[in-house]
Image (cartoon, rainbow, N blue to C red; front, side):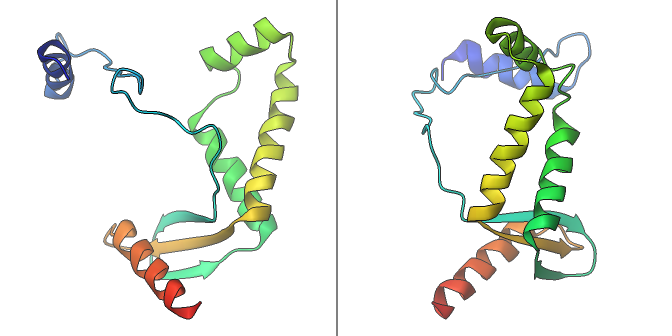
Length: 137
C-alpha cells in the first residue's frame, strides 16, 4: 500500500470530524482475487448470552438470515441495488425474491448454529467447535 493510502487510512481512524472521511480500498487495488462462487458449509448466528452452541432448524435459520441481512442493507436506500434495478429494469421487490432464494440455498446446504457467549470470544469458540466436529468425523 502506498504512503498516500496509508495516510488516508490513518486519518480516517483518528476520528477527528474535520479530517475524517470514509476510507475505501478495493480488492483490486490490493491484487486480491474474489472467487465467484463459495461453498458455505456452516453458518453461525452470534448472540450475547449464556454460553453454548445449538443447532438451528432450516426454518429458524432462514428467518434469522433474512432478518440479519435486512438489518444491514436497506433495499430502498442502497445505491448499488437501486442502480442495478434501474439499469436492468428489475423491480425492487423482485430483488427481495432473489435475496430470499439465495438465503434459502445457503440454509439448505449448510449447518446452522446459534452461538451465545458473554465474553465475545466467538472466534475461539467457533474454532474449538470446528476442531471437535473434525474429530467426530
